Image 1: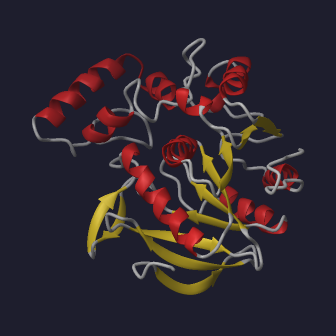
Image 2: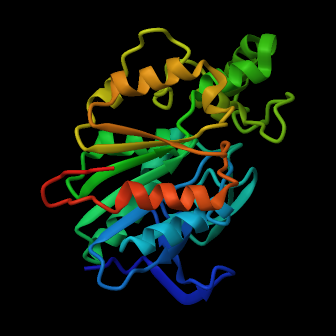
Length: 309
């Protein structure tokens, strides 16, 4: 039975000439998440995609994912989580609240994903593929490890990057002083003050920076920077995992490519690593992304948990 708190709106059509429905799905703490539902009639399999830092369901690559997954027979969903944009207004318990990547907390990402997963499982989907892009990969892994939902049959990790390494590389010698300042501000009651630094276009509140951009946090999963690091989270995943990376992804390959690929293969048991030709972090070559997604999903049989790609 679908919970009454979920609100359904009219179908919407965009430039790909693919019809989808616009939904608002409410989290357990009352936040309403704008959601696009690309339904494939008769499908029992649904892909739920989690966008990256400051992302949204309007990104071009997301529409390409919807088309590819629909073409192999799967429904597809992408929603704006509380990390969408930089300063983004959401309705929460009928009040307008400001979230966005500058204020989101990684620990709350489970609430967003859980609301969407439960909503569509209540609609009768038997197989769920949980997909994430960039920072969304960290959220997807964290959610699956915490819930081990048996309907989730596969993870798709697109451009999983070392977010702490990215932060340190951008901030350089300012990183340690900003860690100290964030802690002081939170302890003195100014947790929502935004830290001032050059990390265009991103900046973070003291609370977000202190919770999520210091080494060793729950979001620090893809630690390519640490030689020989063993990720308990990744090691615990027993279902299928596709890791998809553009061959020119300078965000993922901030570290040496061999180190990144070895880390993934050593930490994830049942993994296929797929390179997308002529693509960077945001997959501008849409045709190559489309072809890759179709190739990775055409021969999956969830009944016997096998994959051949």
